[in-house]
Length: 367
Image (cartoon, one colour):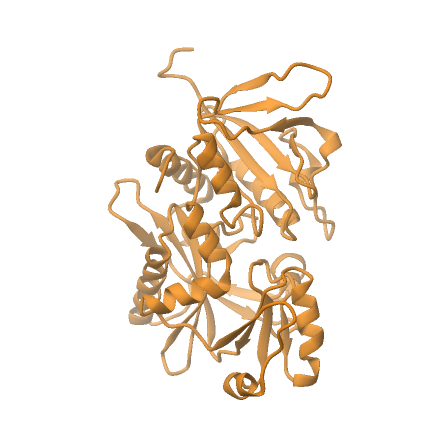
């Protein structure tokens, strides 16, 4: 085939070593089904929980959630591969202990659909930079800064953006009486570098704090204790424009929690009907524009690229308080990021295509 008609060679990375492994697998299944195969030659590469890379079939059960059973990558179910950090190669190499290394052909672009540590936190982005490959999403610094909620809040605050009161507890540290008085009750205890609400607890009595800290530290030794913010839980998608004129924001959405947990936990997000969503959110026009502007400002403050989902609260007094910035939000059928863009006129398939085209436009190298 001539160069003008050759399909773009795309590696879709999913799974990974974090506690969000299964959500990444389901997200990858949605993206695979949306890709136009007349334009993209796709290599699905799963990373198992131990960190082994394997090429899997498109129709693998690894990419589908069956009822309450969440999928996982099985390294024994496909061809083992590795990506060398060599920009002169830009190829996946077959991992075969008894044969000479062979490659699977050139790679044009990578979609690192990984959530959490060892994927969304700048680590995989660093490998892709070393390998000289264009990839979807933010670069090393923005990915790392957004993943660490402590540093994310510091950067946002330094840009003059509103964040709620919080304390950071490193291993063996405990919350002081002064901090308890400052934060009040209830508080939310969460891993500093986690996602999908894994390891998060709501604490309504200080007697329960140690249990919550133990749950959070099972995911991350560094923990945040955040004051509860009374308000509506609003999310907004941000996406770079292909013409280079900067990012734009989607229609915002509202999350209304109905589960007994009292917050948007993992169960409500992915398993049960513990939350209701308004897409778009029923906000006054002026507030909608403020939310969208705040989302873009947070995206730019962290130096994000490609895409992000910005989570915030809108208080009864009309104040906006930023909560989190997710540089690789979920792409499951239930995920808010694609739903918000669909409500804004950009459907799932064209959204995926735009992200890949943005990565190809930006190319490899510093962002």
